[in-house]
Image 1 (spheres, protein in one colour):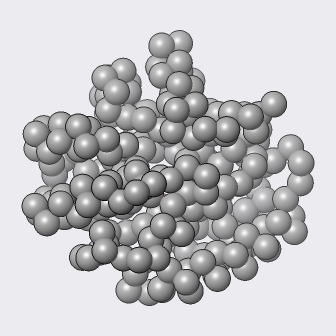
Image 2: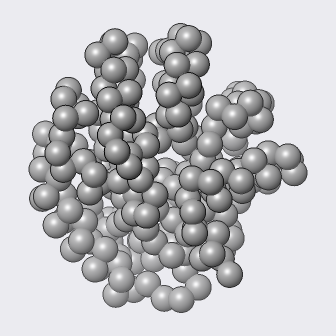
Length: 232
Ligand SMILES: [Fe+2]
């Protein structure tokens, strides 16, 4: 299994508070059978420039490297980039893509999206070598019209959903249906700690049938080339 969205880097955001907590999160992921994870700390353009963010991220990754050991998931560096006006023109954005994937994990506002916002997503999608992966898509379902989802899929925008979407009894059936219909591409834990927001990917996989698991494995091969090698 792979985790495409987690806040495992220490002291970067509201996720892990220390290298020890990061280690516990990685151990939990490893125990669940996760062999590769993307560390995706929040990026807010009004708090850091991309350069400042990358410096902070490198320092956090170094701290984590001191406690990392073989047997833990391989880590790829990325970011959960929060939408801002003008994002599609932002020069430093390429460096925030998830390592070796070209994917930009994009967190959108929790409201109805304006035409302009949608256009920015499409403009990002047109940038060479970039593909938008919406972070925890399940949180926007309420706000968007079916036509908008169709347009996003037609444009090749990918959807990441959190493991919790598959675990809540209220949403589980919907999550499985969306996965079968090709409306969910990748899963992430969006884990922040070892308390209320701990990694729970194994539990999410446990509710999936063979068919859904095959879909996810195919998607990992397709969108995260080389990642499955980490498990060998
Ligand atoms: Fe997140």
